[in-house]
Length: 410
View 1 (tube, helix red, strand yellow):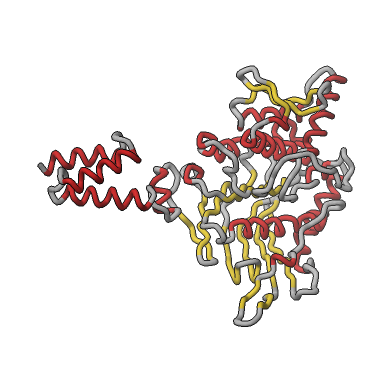
View 2 (cartoon, one colour):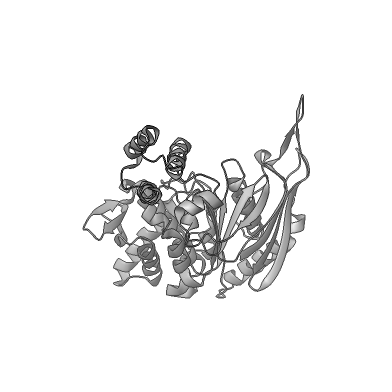
Protein backbone atom coordinates (compact mmCIF):
# COMPACT_ATOMS: atom_id res chain seq x y z
CA UNK A 1 0.00 0.00 0.00
CA UNK A 2 1.20 3.50 -0.91
CA UNK A 3 -0.91 6.65 -0.52
CA UNK A 4 -0.64 8.91 -3.57
CA UNK A 5 -3.01 11.72 -2.65
CA UNK A 6 -5.12 12.92 0.26
CA UNK A 7 -8.00 15.39 0.12
CA UNK A 8 -9.63 16.86 3.23
CA UNK A 9 -12.80 18.87 3.57
CA UNK A 10 -13.86 20.48 6.87
CA UNK A 11 -11.34 18.35 8.74
CA UNK A 12 -10.07 20.15 11.85
CA UNK A 13 -8.54 23.43 10.65
CA UNK A 14 -8.73 22.60 6.95
CA UNK A 15 -11.65 23.86 4.90
CA UNK A 16 -10.32 22.19 1.77
CA UNK A 17 -6.83 20.87 1.10
CA UNK A 18 -5.20 18.38 -1.26
CA UNK A 19 -1.75 16.85 -0.65
CA UNK A 20 0.33 14.66 -2.96
CA UNK A 21 2.75 12.10 -1.53
CA UNK A 22 5.80 10.30 -2.88
CA UNK A 23 6.09 6.50 -2.49
CA UNK A 24 9.07 6.53 -0.11
CA UNK A 25 9.72 9.31 2.42
CA UNK A 26 7.57 12.40 2.97
CA UNK A 27 8.21 15.10 5.57
CA UNK A 28 5.61 17.63 6.72
CA UNK A 29 6.86 20.94 8.11
CA UNK A 30 5.21 24.16 9.24
CA UNK A 31 4.71 26.42 12.22
CA UNK A 32 2.92 25.12 15.30
CA UNK A 33 -0.80 25.02 14.63
CA UNK A 34 -0.55 24.67 10.85
CA UNK A 35 -2.07 21.18 10.88
CA UNK A 36 0.82 18.73 10.61
CA UNK A 37 -0.63 16.37 13.22
CA UNK A 38 -4.10 16.85 11.74
CA UNK A 39 -2.81 15.56 8.40
CA UNK A 40 -1.35 12.48 10.10
CA UNK A 41 -4.61 11.88 11.96
CA UNK A 42 -6.56 12.07 8.70
CA UNK A 43 -4.08 9.73 7.03
CA UNK A 44 -4.59 7.24 9.85
CA UNK A 45 -8.33 7.37 9.19
CA UNK A 46 -7.69 6.83 5.48
CA UNK A 47 -5.23 3.96 5.99
CA UNK A 48 -7.41 2.34 8.66
CA UNK A 49 -10.18 1.97 6.09
CA UNK A 50 -8.27 -1.18 5.13
CA UNK A 51 -9.32 -2.62 8.50
CA UNK A 52 -12.99 -2.42 7.49
CA UNK A 53 -12.31 -5.72 5.77
CA UNK A 54 -10.19 -7.28 8.53
CA UNK A 55 -11.92 -9.19 11.35
CA UNK A 56 -11.02 -8.18 14.90
CA UNK A 57 -9.16 -4.98 13.97
CA UNK A 58 -10.90 -1.65 14.46
CA UNK A 59 -10.83 1.02 11.79
CA UNK A 60 -10.78 4.73 12.73
CA UNK A 61 -13.77 7.04 12.41
CA UNK A 62 -14.03 10.80 12.07
CA UNK A 63 -14.38 12.04 15.65
CA UNK A 64 -16.22 15.05 17.05
CA UNK A 65 -12.90 16.87 17.54
CA UNK A 66 -12.10 16.37 13.85
CA UNK A 67 -15.04 18.55 12.75
CA UNK A 68 -14.04 22.00 11.56
CA UNK A 69 -15.82 24.86 13.32
CA UNK A 70 -16.33 28.46 12.21
CA UNK A 71 -16.39 31.30 14.72
CA UNK A 72 -19.05 33.85 13.94
CA UNK A 73 -19.62 37.04 15.92
CA UNK A 74 -21.88 35.51 18.53
CA UNK A 75 -21.71 31.77 17.94
CA UNK A 76 -19.61 28.83 16.75
CA UNK A 77 -20.91 26.44 14.11
CA UNK A 78 -19.61 23.00 13.00
CA UNK A 79 -19.12 22.55 9.26
CA UNK A 80 -20.28 19.57 7.20
CA UNK A 81 -19.67 17.32 5.43
CA UNK A 82 -16.35 16.31 6.94
CA UNK A 83 -14.49 14.28 4.33
CA UNK A 84 -11.28 12.26 4.17
CA UNK A 85 -10.66 11.12 0.60
CA UNK A 86 -7.71 9.03 -0.47
CA UNK A 87 -6.09 7.77 -3.66
CA UNK A 88 -3.63 4.90 -3.24
CA UNK A 89 -1.92 1.97 -4.87
CA UNK A 90 -2.07 -1.54 -3.50
CA UNK A 91 -0.67 -4.73 -5.00
CA UNK A 92 -0.37 -3.00 -8.37
CA UNK A 93 -3.98 -1.82 -8.29
CA UNK A 94 -5.09 1.81 -8.04
CA UNK A 95 -7.76 2.42 -5.42
CA UNK A 96 -9.76 5.43 -4.21
CA UNK A 97 -12.05 5.71 -1.22
CA UNK A 98 -13.91 8.26 0.88
CA UNK A 99 -14.78 8.44 4.57
CA UNK A 100 -17.41 11.04 5.39
CA UNK A 101 -19.40 12.41 8.31
CA UNK A 102 -22.48 14.30 7.17
CA UNK A 103 -23.78 15.68 10.47
CA UNK A 104 -23.16 16.01 14.18
CA UNK A 105 -25.27 12.92 14.95
CA UNK A 106 -24.13 10.91 11.94
CA UNK A 107 -21.58 8.13 11.94
CA UNK A 108 -18.62 7.97 9.60
CA UNK A 109 -19.75 6.46 6.31
CA UNK A 110 -18.24 3.31 4.81
CA UNK A 111 -20.33 3.09 1.64
CA UNK A 112 -17.65 4.79 -0.47
CA UNK A 113 -14.89 2.59 0.90
CA UNK A 114 -16.08 -0.69 -0.60
CA UNK A 115 -13.05 -1.18 -2.84
CA UNK A 116 -10.45 -0.95 -0.07
CA UNK A 117 -12.68 -3.06 2.20
CA UNK A 118 -13.07 -5.75 -0.47
CA UNK A 119 -9.34 -5.76 -1.14
CA UNK A 120 -8.67 -6.34 2.56
CA UNK A 121 -11.30 -9.10 2.71
CA UNK A 122 -9.70 -10.85 -0.27
CA UNK A 123 -6.28 -10.74 1.36
CA UNK A 124 -7.70 -12.01 4.65
CA UNK A 125 -9.40 -14.94 2.90
CA UNK A 126 -6.17 -15.83 1.11
CA UNK A 127 -4.21 -15.70 4.37
CA UNK A 128 -6.76 -17.96 6.06
CA UNK A 129 -6.41 -20.36 3.15
CA UNK A 130 -2.69 -20.57 3.85
CA UNK A 131 -1.56 -18.62 0.79
CA UNK A 132 1.64 -16.60 0.96
CA UNK A 133 0.17 -13.23 0.03
CA UNK A 134 2.00 -10.17 1.29
CA UNK A 135 0.12 -7.98 3.76
CA UNK A 136 0.91 -4.25 4.06
CA UNK A 137 2.14 -2.87 7.37
CA UNK A 138 0.03 0.03 8.70
CA UNK A 139 1.20 1.92 11.78
CA UNK A 140 1.02 5.34 13.42
CA UNK A 141 3.44 6.67 16.04
CA UNK A 142 2.29 9.92 17.61
CA UNK A 143 4.27 12.56 19.48
CA UNK A 144 2.71 11.12 22.66
CA UNK A 145 4.31 7.71 22.22
CA UNK A 146 5.71 6.60 25.57
CA UNK A 147 6.39 2.90 24.95
CA UNK A 148 5.29 1.52 28.27
CA UNK A 149 3.45 -1.72 28.87
CA UNK A 150 -0.25 -1.48 28.15
CA UNK A 151 -3.15 -3.88 28.12
CA UNK A 152 -3.45 -6.34 25.28
CA UNK A 153 -6.99 -5.77 24.09
CA UNK A 154 -6.90 -7.25 20.60
CA UNK A 155 -9.43 -9.85 19.49
CA UNK A 156 -7.10 -11.59 17.03
CA UNK A 157 -5.54 -14.97 17.78
CA UNK A 158 -1.92 -14.57 18.86
CA UNK A 159 -0.67 -16.94 16.16
CA UNK A 160 -2.56 -15.25 13.32
CA UNK A 161 -0.75 -13.13 10.75
CA UNK A 162 -3.46 -10.51 11.32
CA UNK A 163 -1.95 -10.00 14.80
CA UNK A 164 0.51 -7.69 13.07
CA UNK A 165 -2.26 -5.07 12.85
CA UNK A 166 -3.11 -5.07 16.56
CA UNK A 167 -2.77 -1.64 18.15
CA UNK A 168 -0.98 -0.34 15.05
CA UNK A 169 -2.94 2.89 14.93
CA UNK A 170 -2.92 3.63 18.65
CA UNK A 171 -1.16 7.01 18.65
CA UNK A 172 0.33 6.59 22.14
CA UNK A 173 1.67 3.07 21.50
CA UNK A 174 2.93 0.50 23.97
CA UNK A 175 5.56 -2.19 23.81
CA UNK A 176 3.61 -5.13 25.23
CA UNK A 177 3.01 -6.78 21.87
CA UNK A 178 6.56 -7.04 20.57
CA UNK A 179 7.92 -7.65 24.11
CA UNK A 180 5.75 -10.73 24.50
CA UNK A 181 6.66 -11.78 20.98
CA UNK A 182 10.36 -11.51 21.85
CA UNK A 183 9.80 -13.66 24.92
CA UNK A 184 8.02 -16.30 22.85
CA UNK A 185 10.76 -16.36 20.21
CA UNK A 186 13.47 -16.70 22.86
CA UNK A 187 11.63 -19.73 24.28
CA UNK A 188 11.37 -21.22 20.79
CA UNK A 189 15.11 -20.69 20.34
CA UNK A 190 15.81 -22.56 23.59
CA UNK A 191 13.47 -25.38 22.62
CA UNK A 192 14.78 -25.80 19.07
CA UNK A 193 18.40 -24.98 19.76
CA UNK A 194 18.56 -22.28 17.08
CA UNK A 195 17.42 -18.69 16.64
CA UNK A 196 14.20 -18.32 14.61
CA UNK A 197 14.71 -16.37 11.37
CA UNK A 198 12.06 -13.81 12.31
CA UNK A 199 13.83 -13.01 15.60
CA UNK A 200 17.12 -12.55 13.79
CA UNK A 201 15.37 -10.26 11.29
CA UNK A 202 14.09 -7.94 14.02
CA UNK A 203 17.47 -7.88 15.74
CA UNK A 204 19.16 -7.00 12.47
CA UNK A 205 16.72 -4.14 11.87
CA UNK A 206 17.43 -2.73 15.33
CA UNK A 207 21.20 -3.03 14.86
CA UNK A 208 20.99 -1.25 11.50
CA UNK A 209 19.18 1.71 13.07
CA UNK A 210 20.99 1.82 16.42
CA UNK A 211 24.73 1.52 15.91
CA UNK A 212 25.34 1.35 19.68
CA UNK A 213 23.27 -1.82 19.99
CA UNK A 214 25.18 -5.10 20.25
CA UNK A 215 22.11 -7.26 20.78
CA UNK A 216 18.44 -7.00 21.68
CA UNK A 217 17.09 -9.96 23.62
CA UNK A 218 14.57 -11.08 26.21
CA UNK A 219 16.08 -12.11 29.55
CA UNK A 220 13.97 -14.96 30.88
CA UNK A 221 15.42 -14.63 34.38
CA UNK A 222 14.64 -10.91 34.59
CA UNK A 223 11.44 -11.33 32.57
CA UNK A 224 12.38 -8.17 30.68
CA UNK A 225 13.44 -7.00 27.25
CA UNK A 226 17.14 -6.09 27.41
CA UNK A 227 19.57 -4.18 25.24
CA UNK A 228 23.28 -5.00 25.25
CA UNK A 229 25.45 -2.05 24.19
CA UNK A 230 28.74 -2.37 22.33
CA UNK A 231 30.50 -0.68 25.25
CA UNK A 232 29.52 -3.56 27.54
CA UNK A 233 26.49 -2.04 29.28
CA UNK A 234 23.28 -4.04 29.54
CA UNK A 235 20.06 -2.23 30.39
CA UNK A 236 16.40 -3.26 30.53
CA UNK A 237 14.14 -1.49 28.06
CA UNK A 238 12.39 0.52 30.78
CA UNK A 239 15.69 2.09 31.94
CA UNK A 240 16.88 3.23 28.52
CA UNK A 241 17.00 6.95 27.82
CA UNK A 242 13.95 8.44 26.12
CA UNK A 243 15.88 8.83 22.87
CA UNK A 244 17.22 5.28 22.77
CA UNK A 245 13.92 3.80 23.92
CA UNK A 246 11.94 5.74 21.33
CA UNK A 247 14.20 4.78 18.46
CA UNK A 248 14.56 1.16 19.54
CA UNK A 249 10.86 0.67 20.16
CA UNK A 250 9.73 2.25 16.91
CA UNK A 251 12.16 0.28 14.75
CA UNK A 252 11.52 -2.97 16.62
CA UNK A 253 7.76 -2.42 16.42
CA UNK A 254 7.82 -1.87 12.65
CA UNK A 255 10.11 -4.87 12.12
CA UNK A 256 8.00 -7.05 14.42
CA UNK A 257 4.87 -6.17 12.46
CA UNK A 258 6.60 -6.98 9.17
CA UNK A 259 7.63 -10.44 10.39
CA UNK A 260 4.19 -11.22 11.86
CA UNK A 261 2.29 -10.05 8.79
CA UNK A 262 4.59 -11.78 6.31
CA UNK A 263 6.36 -14.72 7.97
CA UNK A 264 6.77 -16.45 4.60
CA UNK A 265 9.28 -13.75 3.62
CA UNK A 266 11.69 -14.94 6.30
CA UNK A 267 14.73 -12.68 6.58
CA UNK A 268 13.33 -10.51 3.75
CA UNK A 269 10.29 -9.45 5.79
CA UNK A 270 11.64 -5.99 6.61
CA UNK A 271 12.96 -5.35 3.11
CA UNK A 272 10.03 -6.73 1.07
CA UNK A 273 7.01 -5.66 3.14
CA UNK A 274 5.31 -2.50 1.91
CA UNK A 275 2.74 -0.31 3.64
CA UNK A 276 2.28 3.07 5.30
CA UNK A 277 3.95 4.26 8.51
CA UNK A 278 3.03 7.63 10.04
CA UNK A 279 5.38 9.31 12.53
CA UNK A 280 4.65 12.55 14.38
CA UNK A 281 7.82 14.42 15.39
CA UNK A 282 10.23 11.89 13.96
CA UNK A 283 13.09 13.63 15.77
CA UNK A 284 11.46 13.18 19.21
CA UNK A 285 14.17 12.94 21.93
CA UNK A 286 16.90 12.42 19.31
CA UNK A 287 20.43 13.79 19.60
CA UNK A 288 21.43 15.83 16.48
CA UNK A 289 23.70 12.99 15.31
CA UNK A 290 20.70 10.65 15.30
CA UNK A 291 18.55 13.24 13.57
CA UNK A 292 20.99 13.18 10.67
CA UNK A 293 20.75 9.38 10.37
CA UNK A 294 17.18 8.39 11.14
CA UNK A 295 15.69 8.86 7.66
CA UNK A 296 18.51 7.03 5.87
CA UNK A 297 18.36 4.24 8.46
CA UNK A 298 14.61 3.78 8.05
CA UNK A 299 14.81 3.88 4.25
CA UNK A 300 17.64 1.34 4.25
CA UNK A 301 15.98 -1.01 6.73
CA UNK A 302 12.44 -0.74 5.32
CA UNK A 303 12.95 0.19 1.63
CA UNK A 304 9.39 -0.65 0.49
CA UNK A 305 7.48 1.17 3.23
CA UNK A 306 6.05 4.64 2.64
CA UNK A 307 6.87 6.95 5.55
CA UNK A 308 4.97 10.18 6.19
CA UNK A 309 6.39 12.12 9.13
CA UNK A 310 6.47 15.56 10.72
CA UNK A 311 9.44 17.47 12.09
CA UNK A 312 10.71 20.82 13.33
CA UNK A 313 14.34 19.81 12.81
CA UNK A 314 16.45 21.44 10.07
CA UNK A 315 18.87 18.52 10.43
CA UNK A 316 16.09 16.15 9.40
CA UNK A 317 15.28 18.33 6.37
CA UNK A 318 18.91 18.30 5.26
CA UNK A 319 18.63 14.51 4.81
CA UNK A 320 15.37 14.46 2.83
CA UNK A 321 15.74 13.96 -0.91
CA UNK A 322 12.18 12.77 -1.54
CA UNK A 323 9.34 15.10 -0.63
CA UNK A 324 9.18 18.01 1.82
CA UNK A 325 5.69 19.48 2.24
CA UNK A 326 5.18 22.85 3.91
CA UNK A 327 1.80 23.57 5.49
CA UNK A 328 0.93 27.26 5.54
CA UNK A 329 -2.36 29.18 5.51
CA UNK A 330 -4.29 25.88 5.37
CA UNK A 331 -2.61 24.85 2.12
CA UNK A 332 0.23 22.49 1.19
CA UNK A 333 3.30 23.55 -0.77
CA UNK A 334 6.21 21.53 -2.11
CA UNK A 335 9.54 22.68 -0.66
CA UNK A 336 12.50 21.79 -2.87
CA UNK A 337 16.26 21.52 -2.47
CA UNK A 338 16.66 20.87 1.25
CA UNK A 339 18.80 17.75 0.78
CA UNK A 340 22.42 18.36 1.75
CA UNK A 341 21.83 22.03 2.49
CA UNK A 342 23.46 23.95 5.31
CA UNK A 343 21.28 23.97 8.42
CA UNK A 344 21.35 27.76 8.63
CA UNK A 345 20.07 28.02 5.06
CA UNK A 346 17.26 25.59 5.84
CA UNK A 347 16.30 27.56 8.94
CA UNK A 348 16.10 30.73 6.90
CA UNK A 349 14.72 29.59 3.54
CA UNK A 350 12.59 26.55 4.39
CA UNK A 351 11.51 27.28 7.95
CA UNK A 352 11.28 31.07 7.89
CA UNK A 353 13.53 31.74 10.87
CA UNK A 354 16.70 33.79 11.33
CA UNK A 355 20.11 32.21 11.80
CA UNK A 356 20.61 34.12 15.05
CA UNK A 357 18.47 35.66 17.75
CA UNK A 358 17.15 38.92 16.36
CA UNK A 359 18.81 41.22 18.99
CA UNK A 360 22.21 39.65 18.23
CA UNK A 361 21.59 39.89 14.48
CA UNK A 362 20.67 43.57 14.84
CA UNK A 363 23.85 44.26 16.81
CA UNK A 364 25.94 42.41 14.22
CA UNK A 365 24.29 44.30 11.34
CA UNK A 366 24.97 47.64 13.03
CA UNK A 367 28.59 46.68 13.64
CA UNK A 368 29.16 45.60 10.03
CA UNK A 369 27.52 48.79 8.76
CA UNK A 370 29.96 50.89 10.81
CA UNK A 371 32.87 48.93 9.36
CA UNK A 372 31.65 49.46 5.80
CA UNK A 373 31.42 53.20 6.56
CA UNK A 374 35.06 53.21 7.68
CA UNK A 375 34.16 53.50 11.37
CA UNK A 376 35.31 50.04 12.44
CA UNK A 377 37.59 51.45 15.14
CA UNK A 378 35.14 54.05 16.45
CA UNK A 379 34.02 54.01 20.06
CA UNK A 380 30.53 52.86 19.02
CA UNK A 381 31.93 50.03 16.88
CA UNK A 382 34.29 48.84 19.61
CA UNK A 383 31.42 48.76 22.10
CA UNK A 384 29.35 46.67 19.70
CA UNK A 385 32.32 44.40 19.10
CA UNK A 386 32.76 43.81 22.82
CA UNK A 387 29.08 42.90 23.17
CA UNK A 388 29.29 40.48 20.24
CA UNK A 389 32.46 38.81 21.53
CA UNK A 390 30.82 38.33 24.93
CA UNK A 391 27.94 36.42 23.34
CA UNK A 392 29.56 34.80 20.30
CA UNK A 393 33.24 34.45 21.14
CA UNK A 394 36.12 35.78 19.04
CA UNK A 395 36.05 32.84 16.59
CA UNK A 396 32.54 33.45 15.27
CA UNK A 397 32.75 33.42 11.43
CA UNK A 398 31.06 36.81 11.12
CA UNK A 399 33.52 38.42 13.53
CA UNK A 400 36.43 36.87 11.65
CA UNK A 401 34.94 38.27 8.44
CA UNK A 402 34.58 41.65 10.16
CA UNK A 403 38.32 41.67 10.94
CA UNK A 404 39.13 41.01 7.29
CA UNK A 405 36.73 43.75 6.25
CA UNK A 406 38.31 46.26 8.69
CA UNK A 407 41.77 45.59 7.23
CA UNK A 408 40.42 45.92 3.69
CA UNK A 409 38.63 49.21 4.40
CA UNK A 410 41.67 50.64 6.15
